[in-house]
Image 1 (cartoon, rainbow, N blue to C red):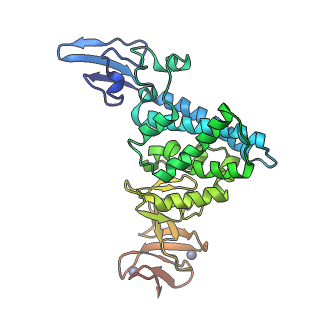
Image 2 (tube, rainbow, N blue to C red):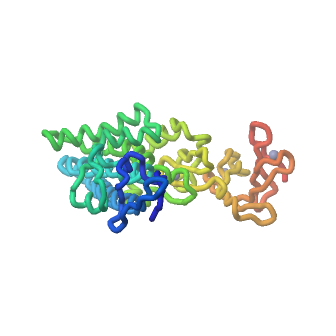
Image 3 (cartoon, helix red, strand yellow):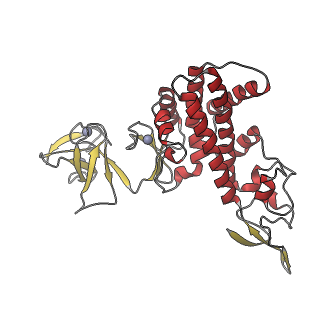
Length: 342
Ligand SMILES: [Zn+2]
Ligand SMILES: [Zn+2]
Ligand SMILES: [Zn+2]
């Protein structure tokens, strides 16, 4: 992306631009104008984020295979901890670069005064923020509670002990620690602002198929995801996810859904929930809001599997569901669901 700016920049932080001669690109020179400093900047943040993500994905998936494979040993667990903690730190940087720009992961005072940041980074010409520094930066735009910090710090301590001294790991205990940690890391660092974007995707974006299955079926991961959804301050409502069937799908303020278990993100405008005419569970029939015939949508219950027609109730104008073959419907008229003759 090429940006021409005058005196300020919208995509790169002011800190990175403390020198008016700072440029991301390699072929542009600053131009002086009568009203101030005019700079042409080639923003490489998008490319930096892509490289960080690819690297994080490699370390994460390699580590999960080692840690969760049948017959894995304590030695496998040690290698996995180092690999997964590396992935966690790369995901943290990925979040910062996406949110604030490439220059923000460079240590203070080490930002080059010109040239290509990507090339400099590849050649090791400057050092990037440590893990604690990254967490501090992320804390500026993402709420991270004490309990989350504890989880996030646990693997780091384990990794440091292994790398700098010595230690033995219990495989099952390490699996539980990693599973709980990854609930937070995948949501806060990997998915990040995508939780509020209209693109429908899941953690399959970050995890290979087998690893996705392993993780999203791990008991500790499921417990942590449920707790995280329940404690999510941004959650306006918690629903059953139509991808993984866990009750961890949060409805977020910007009309987006986000599932703490499988990472599903989707627009609220695209998918709706209605009470089920068969099992009478509230908000259990999921239907395609954008696809309708004469005001009726086709849906399916996530609990009992019944198919349903979904439309507005003639009595209360709320969403209700109705059997395709029997003369029964269910609506949330009043506080309780009632089963009505159609
Ligand atoms: Zn889900
Ligand atoms: Zn049902
Ligand atoms: Zn009604």
